[in-house]
Length: 183
Image (cartoon, rainbow, N blue to C red; front, side):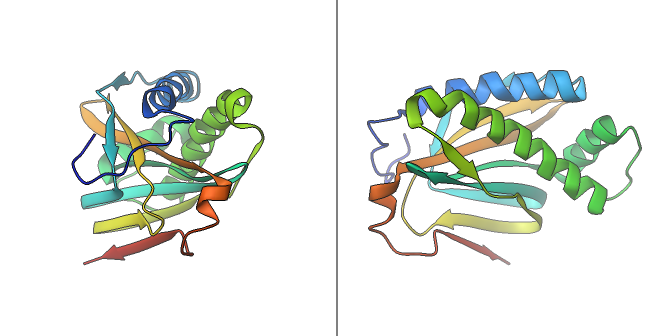
């Protein structure tokens, strides 16, 4: 755990979140994209950050637990993922690439949600919000931590992150729950 990070919820430990993230990310990338991914050691983080040209796709959770899940990658890897998914080449990030990353996020985080349901109960998902840009940070104002699992794919690293807290804890904190800033 990083210094300065609050203690993770004892109800759903980061190691259990990471195991479900790994299982479902490997499944989606293998079945839907024909791409292999190699999970790296789990990390606990306070925000979603991007350097250089990056894409982050975020979905919100609602139900007995609140929070978000996201997939973040470089624009180059996003174009490769879109090419594999849509069977077309992409020289730059366009709406098709952004839509493909949103859909991959929907599949990965949606499968995570379904796998976590026996432990967390029913969770609803928002539609993906996809952000493309340079040097930005997204963080929860509620101070929740993100369980982050980096993956190696096609010579690059991307991350899948999940942030969850029981709803009764989330409702006693400041809203809105997510702020995006950039330079």
